[in-house]
Length: 264
Image (tube, rainbow, N blue to C red; front, side, top):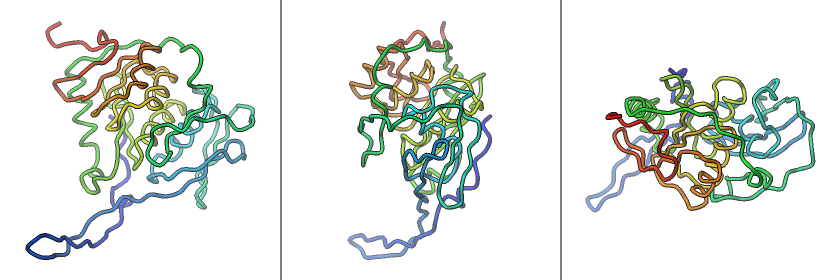
């Protein structure tokens, strides 16, 4: 089972709101998710910045650099230091290159960015696996009830990786891209293998599917919908793409053979 994250109270702030209805007004206490700016550096060269829920920052730094095309595989990252001034310093066995040409994807506010070279070229073979419905039921239920943060704030996305019949890692963030990047970062840091199934509460747009397929994850699942480009990338890579995921139902848009029905 994935390690428990820190208490949601360290990731939220209290705020008194005013509930207004036709019958009048009343005050109510709400919890607001904390969103913090972080700069990401590779070998002391600043690469970019992002607003992040301040948890899983080491994983986020590695996953962010993977999406930008600077880190390509597990084993390259040697050290990640979280600096108090809001900087994630990643040290990796890679040569720094000039800034990559990036594509702004469908992330709200331009938060989804991928390197152009990641979008082009052939895919490496995916690390094969299958998943059964008993596993799917556990995976989805554990993911949706992993912490109180979602219920407390109604403001975060979650993303987990199912592997070896358990929820291997799970991360949350205000941004759906960031939550996925944290899972990919965990793979890059050796905390998990790509041979598994990923589940996200966010939409399966092109960049979300692309990063998962590039790192080698064969089964990509979402509580919500895919886009046309997300589906096209799944077809190119051969990934299983499952949307509207529920404990007893999947709508599989591509490569359904990796999903094992109870009756088989």
